[in-house]
Length: 296
Length: 164
Ligand SMILES: Cc1cc2nc3c(=O)[nH]c(=O)nc-3n(C[C@H](O)[C@H](O)[C@H](O)COP(=O)(O)OP(=O)(O)OC[C@H]3O[C@@H](n4cnc5c(N)ncnc54)[C@H](O)[C@@H]3O)c2cc1C
Ligand code: FES
Ligand code: FES
Image (tube, rainbow over all chains, first blue to last red; front, side, top):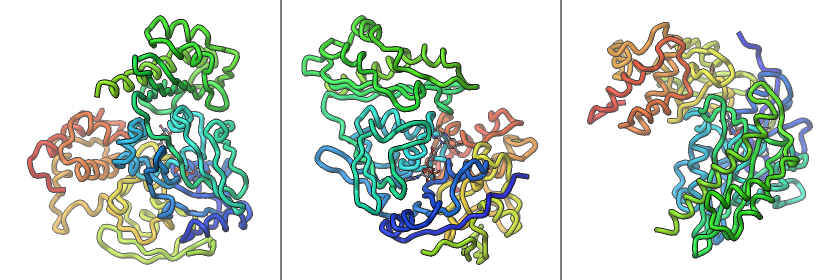
C-alpha cells in the first residue's frame, strides 16, 4: 500500500483576492488547481508545498470572455469545460481539439489550463500550441497584474516566469483570423498521445491568393522550452507552401538550436531527427485548416 | 474555510448517504471512501492516476479518487460502484450488461470501469465504438483485452432509451 502524503495544511479561499494574499503571505504555500500533476508530486515526496491553497472552485478563474481580438480564458477552466465552450470552438477551434486529446475523461474533468501551463512538463499538450498561437498570460501578485507573452512565460523544464507569490489568472488567446489555421502533431509513446516525446505546433495565415503571409512554427521536447523555428518560418513566407517550398524551408532548419533531452522514451538523436518531421506535419495541418477557411 | 488547517470537518454524500467526518488534509479521497467510510467497493490500484480503478463520480463528473484530496470533496455528491445496484440487490443495467457480455475476469478494474461507463452514457447516450474506447481510456484492464467491455457498453448504447 502506498505511502501517505506528508502532513500538510489546506485552505480554500473564497475569492481570488484572498488566494493572492495567502500565496504571498504564507511561507512554502502552493496553489492546488486540478491536482492532476500536483497530487502525484506530493505522493512522490519529491517536492511540493507544506500548505495548499485550493483555487479549483474560484469562480473568478472559470470565466471565458470574448473580446474584440482575443478570448480571455480563466486559468481555472478545466479541459472538459473548454471542450464544451461554444466561444472557444468558434474562435480558436484547435484548442478544443488539443485539450480533447489530453489523457482521459477523468483527468480532463479536473485538469485545468492554468495548471497545465504552470506545471510546464515538457510532455504537456498546451505549451507548444499556446506558444504558436501567441497566447499572453495574465499573472497577478500582491504588486498587481502583469501580462507575459508565451515566448517569455515558459522558461525551462517545470519552470515559468511567474515570480514568488504570483499566480496565473487568465490566458489571452488571440481569435483565429480569417484565412488562418492551426496545427498540432505530437509524437507520443505508443502513438496514444500519452507522454509527448516532441510536439510540433503551427499557425499560418494565407494571403488572398493563397500564399503564406504569416507563419509560426513551434516545437517542444527538443529543448528546455518551446522553440520557434524562425529560419524555417522565414523560408516559407511569401511562398505557396507547396511541398518543394516546404522542402527548401525545412532545409534551413538550424539544428544547433535544438538541445533535446536523452531519456528512456527517446534518445536525443531521435528527437532531433523527428523535429522537422513533426513540425512539418503540424504546418501541413495548419495549411489545410487555413485553406478550409478560405473556401467557406 | 479561509484559515489553513491540517484537518477539516467535511460533509459528503456517498451513494445517497450523508456523512460528516473529520479528515486530515493529506487524505486522498479514495482512502477516505475506503478507510474512513469503509466502502471498499471502490478499488485502489496504482495510486498514480493511471489505472482508473478508483474512479468515482463527483458532482456528476467522473474522476480518479486517488488524484483528489478528501477535503476538496467537501459538500460533494459522490457516486461509487456500491450505489449502482438497487437496494433490493437487482443490478443496474450497466452491471447486467457486464455480466451478460462477460466484461470482467478478475474484477479488479471493474468498479472503476463501471463508473467510467456510467459517466460516458450519461454524457453521450449513443456512443460509437471509438467513443466508447476513448471513454474508458483512463481505465486499465489487465484481463479482458477490453473487447467484452466495449461490447457490454455498446449493447446499452444501441438501445433507444438508455436508463443510466
Ligand atoms: C494519468 C494522467 C495522464 C496525463 N496525461 C497528460 C497528457 O497527455 N498531456 C498533458 O498535457 N497533461 C497530462 N497530464 C497532466 C494533466 O494535464 C494536469 O492536469 C496538468 O499537468 C496540471 O494541471 P492541474 O490543473 O491538474 O494542476 P495542478 O496539478 O493542481 O498544479 C500543477 C502545478 O501548477 C501550479 N498551478 C496550478 N494552477 C496555477 C495557477 N493558476 N497559477 C500558478 N500556478 C498554478 C500548481 O501550484 C502546481 O505546481 C496527465 C495527468 C495524469 C494524472
Ligand atoms: S488508483 Fe487511482 S488511478 Fe489507479
Ligand atoms: S477484469 Fe481483471 S483487470 Fe479488468
